[in-house]
Length: 188
Image (cartoon, rainbow, N blue to C red; front, side, top):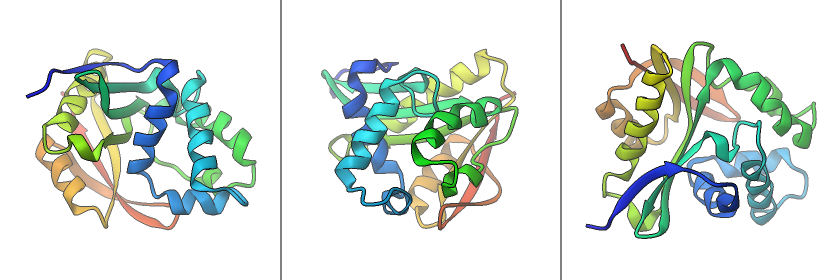
């Protein structure tokens, strides 16, 4: 087995991080929000956000799993109380009329797991669990009583992983045109 370490992301890794992050998202729905955008343009847009501080997708909120020198997985997570503030820089690029302005992914008091993705070449090696362990330890140390995430109802394999880690369904939410389940884990 390769040597896997979990560490904080770095600004200069923004392109690799964005590529992985997009594996977890309904990119086709996002592209509808950006007139004449291609996948490549959207990837560059997200890489730019990852490289900047003070937004949802900033490298500041990301840990990576590095396997033998390669970024094999990422997880983006932050305080749900900061969601609206961190979303503002994204809206500044998308426009105030963007559908994303009305999207609510998390609640206050919740440590929110925004995105988790593992490279197809590294799946099945426990990397997602390692990323969860790292972020959930951070959440506990920071005094959070719960962590939350949303999962597409059409992704039962991802949901099984989250349930096996200890998340439980709390309700539903709509994220763009996708029906999502809101899962929560109580940390204390």
